Length: 459
Image (cartoon, rainbow, N blue to C red; front, side, top):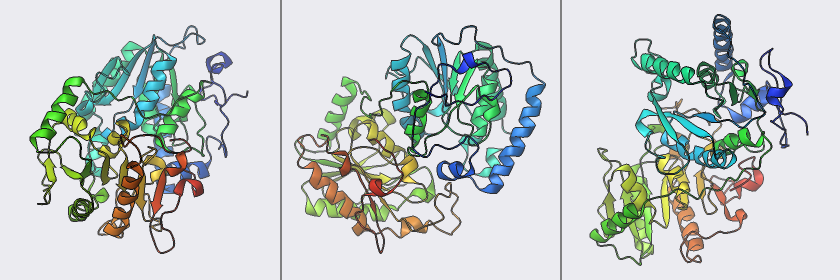
């Protein structure tokens, strides 16, 4: 097999990359291929020029610092591994299959996760990570571009302290699947001996092992798994395996009983929220979906909202407002037959719990970030060429969402609910072909998106 890695530093030896082997995919790009960036990253030519300028400046500063020592024996398995994923809840949920496979591949290694300080407890008790290292990264904490790079933010001091502490620890290996020059620089600043990531978005010179992405598998969960597959080990992309405690599950059952919900009726969750306003389809539209579900089925609807938000559940019989702490929300969600939501963190959490999803997509691309369960549906208007806009909508409102009608979303809900009625617990496996992304519009309706699009190749 041919090597899939390209040397990024002059002093890199063949021995340092000999363990990483090529995993053949279709349409494999070169590491600097502009068409590959266009397919995998929302990067304009202007942004790419800024990335190249930033990389050039950082490369000059790199020469002023002492070089990092190489591993004494690169052929040995790592004893310490750092994984960098400091963004949001959905990003952590997408990371879970990679962490599960990483643990399986290196059971004796100590795995540390550099994680958003507000989410450090999310994966606790899952057996995937030995240590959570909280970090405050300025550009990941704010949506406003000016706040992201405010030079007077105290978050820069906190970030510098964290990186200095990491550098003193000298991890054997460090991973980032972000395809981002900032993450690659953080890998280098961490002082890890071996730094594995993608240079396609810039920063390849900060890596020791620059992985070639597989364009036929653009979903971010697959992008992470590719980092391990380049080592020559098969990966398992399955979503199951997120554990809730018996006490949490018992508390959820007691909570539902307290709402007067019989144990033998189906529950459909509705979560109208999203962290980013441009991804919200609208409370009144979700309320119409809830009304039709209640009129046409015997199900009960759980209207989920985060504590402190202004979302109000519609006043309908058998519709229950649910606003709980994070772990309690997960336990109650695990009892649902289906979740109807936006492109949001709860969508990915439902995937981890094996809860089927009907997700309304607007500014983002589902082949990158969509749900991946065997019953899942994504309702999307494919004709909007401004997608993806990185959630900075160029219009006065997200028309890609506003153009989606309640009839189209309810049609997807009805279809999935009918499929699940033939499965005893609502979660059994259907053939992979049943995973349908419903593209709605004048010419496309109920189209099998995966058969006609370069989306995720495995469920």
